[in-house]
Amino acid sequence: MTPNKEDYLKEIYKLGGSEELVSNKQISDTLKIAPASVTEMLGKLNREGLIKYEPYKGSRLTQEGLRVAFSLVRGHRLWEVFLTRHLGYSWSEAHEDAELLEHVTPARLTLRLDEFLNYPAYCPHGNEIPHTGGQVGSTSLQTLDNLSEGKTSHIRKVTEEKELLDYLQGLGIEIGNAVTVVSFGAYEGPLTLDLNGKRIQISYKAACQIYVD
Ligand SMILES: [Zn+2]
Image 1 (cartoon, rainbow, N blue to C red):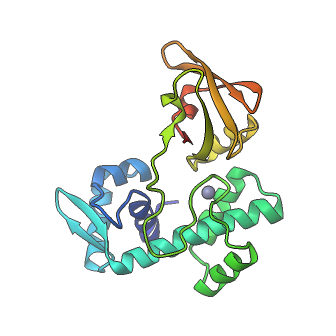
Image 2: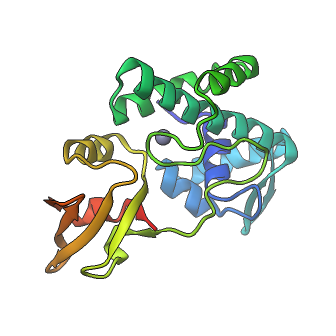
């Protein structure tokens, strides 16, 4: 599926685009789209007044662009809570179906969903659910690979990507778990972790996608 306009707006928002300029490179890296296609789409979004695009510098969301991105992100994360909490979805299943639902959820339904779920603050993967129009996710967290050996921290969020989510859930990782790096494998080898008192091994690549405080 090729990302549509809404996916671009959502990505720009997640990259901080309600407050600062997001470069074309950042967008093409996260959406895994060729730079030429990204430039073309940004031109379109600029003409439609959804972003302010400054050539060679980057893009920022306009008020209208922010409104769209905000409701997508909010809808996505609320659906994820609903699907995992009430329908027994796994982490990756919830993310996958929320990607579809976010584009077709009217504002009224989002409001009711939020109320029904009792206003959750985070999605199952630890991402903040925005409740006002501002930017979320700016709190400073570090990734697990940056933790020093022997230091205990807590898992706050993980990157939402299908294979990664299945891998992490398979290892028994949960948001809020206490985690200590017991040792680092040589040359970016696997990390040995103490997870809530249990020893597990995790790939270095996955450790770079786990955020701790
Ligand atoms: Zn999520």
